[in-house]
Each structure stands twice: as C-alpha cells, then as structure tokens.
Image 1 (spheres, rainbow, N blue to C red):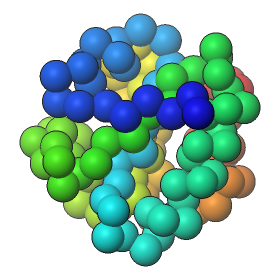
Image 2 (cartoon, one colour; image 1 turned 30 degrees about the vertical axis):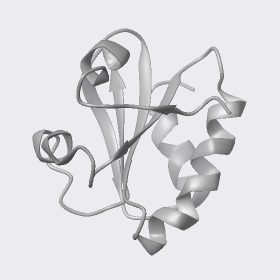
Image 3 (tube, rainbow, N blue to C red; image 1 turned 30 degrees about the horizontal axis):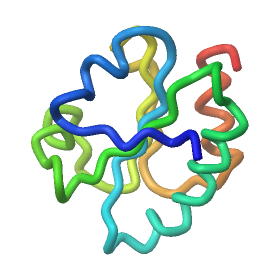
Length: 105
C-alpha cells in the first residue's frame, strides 16, 4: 500500500516538496471508515505522482489543530507545503478527484 502514515515528527518534511494529499482521520469515525479504502486506492493509483498520507487526529492532535481540522474526515491538498485545497466530510472518490483537479491532476 502506498499510503504514508504521517506523524508530528515527519509531517513537515513529507509535505514540503511536490503535491501531498493528506487525510486527517480517526479510528472511531464512521465517515473516516468509508473514506479510508478510497484514500488507500488513490494512493496506489497516484504512486510516484503525489504523496497520499494519513494523520490519526487522536495520536497527533497538534497537527489537526495546526491545520484547523475541526471535523473529520478532512482531506487537505498541499503543494510544496502550502495548502491549495481541502475537502471536509466524506465526499466519495469523485469529491477527492475534484480536489486533485485543483492541482492539475
């Protein structure tokens, strides 16, 4: 699986170059359980093109707070460490593909 599980120690380094599609989620979150397999599938589809990562908000609440993730799932698209788009709530694969279109993918 190409999904990268990000932590507070490697987050900034992982997203600082290129495109990063990051899912902020939690184990207990129903909509997160629906989006998880889609995120993993997209990671496999975009391997080598973008970083697809996940942040467990229960393990790394400071990251969730830093990026104002008040509801989960929240997916944030970064280019060279700068947010260029976000999707709050479960939007299905099409919603995530629409987000990636903002980056020209």
